[in-house]
Image 1 (cartoon, rainbow over the protein chains, first blue to last red):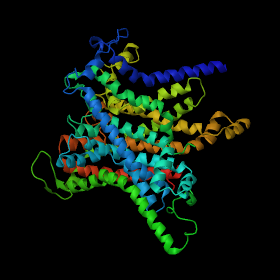
Image 2: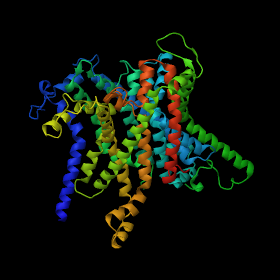
Image 3: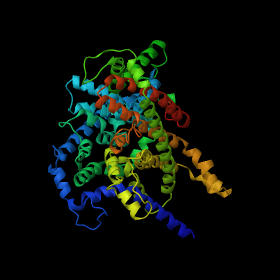
Image 4: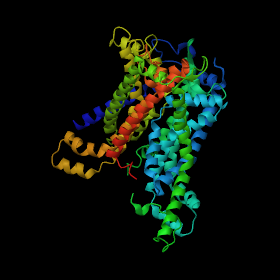
Length: 276
Length: 319
């Protein structure tokens, strides 16, 4: 009886998993189907897998104006830059909120958290106008700066909870040994903060890599990113299924891999140290 | 956090503390250090929130059309236009409906999933890692995939539902307002339930064994055990999941924009899509700015409530 219940439970669990994974499996399946059967109904389940779609998409052999690999490079540049910028300003800010005592700190911390509520759909209009006046349309900074800001409230709050968990005695000891404030931050706090930095980078990198609205609105070609490129495989003339799914697979895979590997770090960070 | 572990000042040699002018100096240094370390982050956030708001306020009182003729001051006309537009109220309602339904489904299903994943099985680790994958998928991609799969003419969902005899006629997911809502919410639930489950699972794994065992010895049923022991311990995690999801749900743009485009008609149009349409398709910057400001005011109230939820149920807001 017990055994039966246990195997029934597992059956349900795996069935649920299959349903959850289905959209992703469909993407991968369609991406390796030959072009002539990719849209066939009833769906063809037996076929010779092909990498032609990947070759076409990455080699720029599609109907779009730009090779998708160029867009992937744009995405990578923007993501790395936005994440680095977010960490560069976020780590000192988190340290200040966790360790330094001054008036107005609590208010500032809560204000920083509140900015997370500012919808990109609201800020995109002013940013669009500012960017065009400054002649910055279709450049990397016009994406990097907003993306860094989008992730910043979470980055700061996540890192603050990590810093609070570092025993202050360690820093005190370094202080007594005559280390400067900067040296303590760099050689004592930073190494101990690595798990937090990993979690914050993953979150902020995910936001930047997947962002759509700003990229759609503020870029044309020179800074266009992968999500916008994927959406262009479908238009009023129809959908290029093979290209779309191959591009989607290539774009989504690195994030999914990172999420799987760094799952525990991510939870740790998102629960703000509520997990002990 | 006790004050003993706070930085009251740097490099204070023993014996130098306590005298009044000295303390003042220490406080001033701490203040400079505190704000100095915060400054770059604050500048970045101000540039992306306060600066746009100033622009919005300025444009909201002007006739400003990127295509049309000259801009000029029009007083409250834009606000009047926005607030008397039934579409705006409908879209606000749609937004609230979207947030409430999606987030409650995600929390409920996320809790169930977390409870399932909390059972020790040989494959738990692998299954958990696979279950959480949707949260990493770019919303554009998941929306495109859902759009293709739900297409009445060539989508797999309608095809298999028909061939298995569950439905006679294909469901018109994007022509029927109710089914369009089902699609929009299904997409959000698919994408974000794993996120809630992940946070709640972390909470479940932190539930200590002793009270559970004690209650079990006292003959408590599984349901009572869950209600009286597990759920209270899970409260902070439910609060965190609720707040993070609600915030993101209010900001949702890409997935609805790609999946239904707000259609059919404007039945699934949320405020974010409305803003996009008015500003970047009609180029009516004045009206879009007025709408943006109204939306920000609504969100400020919501955010305050969400912070209260966090403050009451967790200690993460404590100084």
